[in-house]
Length: 61
Image (cartoon, rainbow, N blue to C red; front, side, top):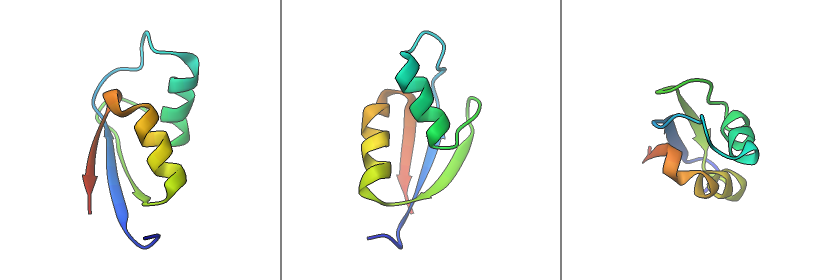
């Protein structure tokens, strides 16, 4: 499972969100709207994605 990748894109602004949700976005390496990252598919990353799923678009690679 650790060799799979997930492409995560920030599609909604973090303005007005909770402070810990903004910290999670930063922790995923996303900086501005429409920025994307390819991350390893680990349980920790999946948990972070689940927490802020309303801000993201996720594509499995």
